Length: 65
Image (tube, rainbow, N blue to C red; front, side):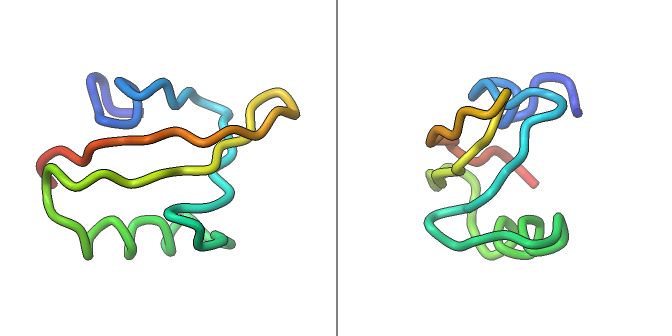
């Protein structure tokens, strides 16, 4: 993970499983990247993240690409 990334600041950790982004189910990492590149810096997204068997939403404000 990139140091000081938006995801890291929001609490996303190595090993977390991102299941959805803004309610859209993800099957591949490329789908996450493709979706994020349609957004602009400053926009907020919500990830559904699974960690240690617990799934919870995480809101992230996107930084520069």
